[in-house]
Amino acid sequence: MQMRDFVVRFAGEGGQGVVTSAEGLAQSSTQVGYHALTFATFPSQILGGPTWTQARISVDPVLAPGDDVDVLVVFNQDAYDSHHQDVRKDGVIIFNSSEFELKGDDRSFGLPIDELAKSTGNNRAANMVIMGALAHLVNMPQQYLVNFVEERFNRGRAEDAEVIKSNIEALTLGRTHIAESGFVLGELAPAERPAYKQLMIKGNEAVSIGAMAAGLDFYVGYPISPATPILLYMERNLVGKDRVAYQVSSEIESITAILGAGYAGKRSMTATSGPGMSLMSEGLGLAWMAEIPLVVVNVQRGGPATGLPTKTEQSDLFGCMYPAHGDVKLPIIAAGTVEECFYGAAKAIEWAERYQGPVILMTEMALAERAQNIPMPDLSKIKQAKREIYTGSNGYLRYAGHDLTPMPIPGSPGAYVANGSEHDEMGDTTHLGEHHVNMTERRFDKIKLLEEDDYEHEQQENSIAVVPWGGSKGPAREAFNTLQKNGLPVSWYYTMYLNPLPPKMLEELKKKDLVIVPELNYQGQFSSILRSLGVKAESITQYTGLPFKARTLVEKITEMTNARLKETVRV
Image (spheres, rainbow, N blue to C red):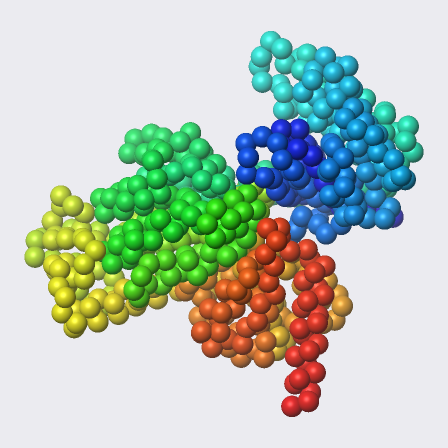
């Protein structure tokens, strides 16, 4: 029976090409029609430290990194000691015999990766040695990899031919050497190339492109893991007339800069992580109070404080939805896939302009650094974000009523005084309670302008629902598919829009006997918010710095569902 997918993990030290190997395998596979998804985790130092990446190659669309490892490629003894237990019983372990020897594991085979690469005259060809060996294990045609090498290294340079030749030689050497071991996994089923165009992209890149597609004018940022690649992408690509991208000296400067840009009529954005969100708290409160459009992207990592700066978590939901002191509840969009990083960023820019205020887009480390092939984004679905601008005469009451009012642009007609104090309808500072009541209700009422009944739902008739959010969507969906095959009576609900929630979805969830929320935090943050809205929600939590395994969720959801069904029968 042919394999429909396989999972490869590369483990070693930072700087040994661990990440490059996984991404190269994924990219070469997608070029011939396979689906691929990578997961990377590494320490926070610049070089060295235990690093591993995982690539899942499949005939079918990939939802999660995969539970079990088919092939483990280890570059040192520590990597083997840490990861060999995750290899399935009939899997294969390839170790770099140029660095160390491994004895006592009959699944292992030594491959002199460095020596083989050097023999080609190209020390950088070590990744190709590995890819050739992996291709043999699943009987992947050599031509697939040759085509990848020719496309990747044909850049119009004088030395291209020699580079291509050495890399193809490295592929052949890796394939030949592992063939001598006798190890095989089986044959990977032929690729079924999708009928649509695809794009191989990482989550941070997708966020950047999505925001630009929605008409982003102004981006500033301060480097912080794992959000820094967004800043780098913007500096290279947000160019041209009336477009600005630059690096500032702190997250406080980031938030105040985009406040000024939003106030001046520009579509503005920054990206940060948990510590930066903390520093932006007061600025977000000002944006809420003064009703100034802007977007902050929070690429979540483990916390609090410095925490786990290069690990994944979903523990910033409280801090994003309620970032400032006083009565504040910001609009939240949480992307669950690389594709949603694109559409979520575009929607965040649109939302900010539509309701005239701050919007938070939440992603997380596992999405930011994930490389995945997605359908080419449909730009026709992206609305150019445009705020309603005041064009009348002076004497205008900027904050009158509870409906959206056109926004004056400084230098144009219409009185507009924006500061952090409470104000009256004109915008003048006041401490009178009646004005504070009126303005508070106005700010909260405006969020209703963002309500959209856009959500996924299946098997709605079941009284128990699985409702993941953010990056836990993939493992949860894979688990749900298994539960469906097992006949467990659960329904599926999912949306990117956490505040405001789609009204119809919230109405349906309130009728459920139990809503199960898989989320990567200790407190069960989203289920707590759902309970405050009248939903009987309970969380499945994990806070290891790693994403859920689908198998874990199958076990937990089955256990919780059966327990609740027994209680219902007793009643």
